[in-house]
Amino acid sequence: MRSVSGLIPTRFLVLVAHLVFVISIFWSRDRNVVASLPTTYTSADYTAKDTEFIIALSITLALFLIEFGGFIGGISMFSHTQSLFSIAAHAGASVALAFFIFDTWSSTLYWWIFAFCSALPAVTEIGVLFRVLVLKKNL
Image 1: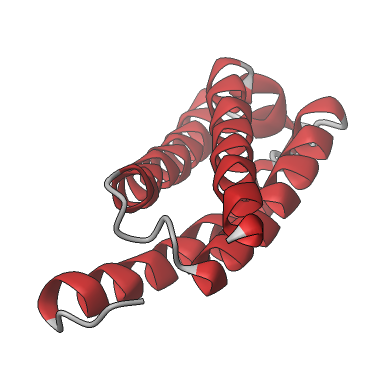
Image 2: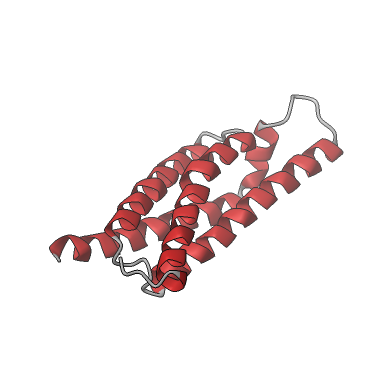
């Protein structure tokens, strides 16, 4: 039981850290959008890339709702496997997004961070939710 008591607050803090970085990117996304464009670009190019980036960040926030819902609802809170996987993915995302913000990475690199650190944990969370709520199996 001791490992569970350490996993729950760690998972919560790492999820919140990742969420804070995503919200920070929403506020300062201009530099990352410009970094992904060629040296000469039109306003249409900028608008298209900015819209793509906003969509990626919005999907990330939607996936956070799924993960926080399962976690705070207590459905996946005591799943050791899901907790460890979520902690690893979101801790990696927090580190990568810190570099993303401070080093002004191209916004196209965000899709890789999104795939491995947001979409993958959300898919596994959906699997846990399906197993518990639909199949009625305990973790």
